[in-house]
Length: 115
Image (cartoon, rainbow, N blue to C red):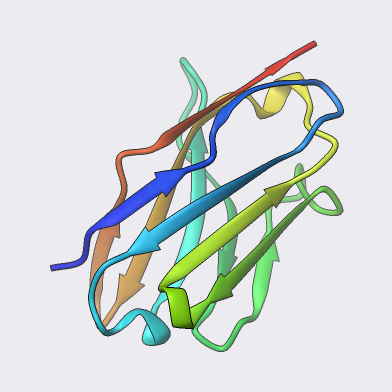
């Protein structure tokens, strides 16, 4: 069983930055693909960014050029650096880990961007 703990959310002004962290338990982290998803009130959950076990990353069009996903396998942690934040980035952000056909979710961290 893998446990995920997100951190780094908070309140920031538009144009500001935040860095989210997703720390995972277990020994299989280096084989996992990890994604950040977000869900705003009244909206469906959407994929923001994902990084494969080999370090390849992809992003939603809405965050390209502003967000960067990275991983540190030695720390079992994935990061999401969010720059030039906009009010529409306000949402609960969730970490998702997929490894060996299993799917795990964290509890989420709230990001609020004031305009």
